[in-house]
Image 1 (tube, rainbow, N blue to C red):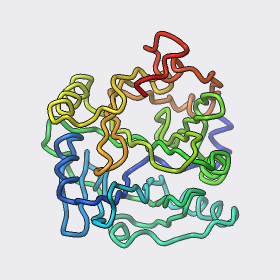
Image 2 (spheres, rainbow, N blue to C red; image 1 turned 135 degrees about the horizontal axis):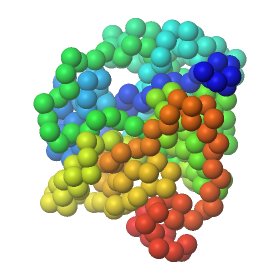
Image 3 (cartoon, helix red, strand yellow; image 1 turned 45 degrees about the horizontal axis):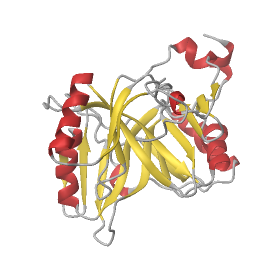
Image 4 (cartoon, rainbow, N blue to C red; image 1 turned 30 degrees about the vertical axis):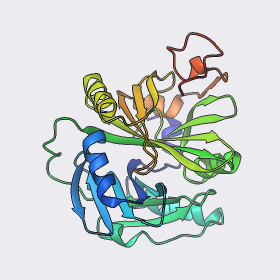
Length: 297
C-alpha cells in the first residue's frame, strides 16, 4: 500500500440514493420503472422506494403535490467503516457545519450515520451498512448501479472546498474552472461532479446499465414515449462511458443511462493526477467534431 493510501483521510465510499420530491408520486413511480428500469419495493401515499440492484433503494420519491416540477433534496453516500464515519463527523464539525440526524425513513436502514447540508442546502446523508436484498431484481432491463449526482452550483469554489477538504472526495479531472469530476472510495472516475452555474440544482443522476445494448433499449423507450432526450449519445472524455440523458422535469433531474464507467485501480486511486482540460466540447464528448460544437448538450 502506498504512503498516500496509509496517510490520506478517507472519504465516503459511494452513492447509494437520491431523495426527490415530485408533484405526482404515482406518475413518477411509473416513469422510473419504465424508463430507468427500477423496481418498486415500498410505497404509500407519501413516499416510494425504488431499487436498481441489491442495495435497499436507489431513489426515494416523496409526494409533493404543491410542486409543479421535481426537486432533489438529498443524496446518500455509504461509508466503509465506523472509524471513517467518526472521522467524517469530526471533519464536518471542525469545519463549522451543523451535524444533522438522518431522515426518519433511513434510520432503520443503516447501522449508524448522520447528515450535513452542503453549501447549496443539499442534504448529504452519510452512513454505514446500508440494508441489502439477497438478490437483484428479476428485471432484465435495469441499471447495475447509481454512479453519481451532477450538481450545478452558483457557489462553485465553496462547494468544491466542502466536498474535497471536508468530505474527502478526490479530483479526477477539471474542465477549465467550470466543471470538476470528483471520485470517492468506490474508485469510479467520479462519484460526484460539480459545474459552475448561475443557480443551484441537481443537473442529473447517472445510472450504469448492463450493456450498450441496454442503453439503446432505454433510448428507444424514451423515443417511443416521446420523452425528451436532453442530450443524445455522448462519448465521455472523462469517464469513457457512452450515455444519453432523458428528462421530464416532473419526475426528477435528467437521468443519464450509461454503458461502462471508468474504475481506477487501487494504485490509480492514490496516485492519479487530475487533468486540467480546456473548455472545449471535445473534452466533454470525444465524438464532437469541432471546438464550437456546443449544441445538443
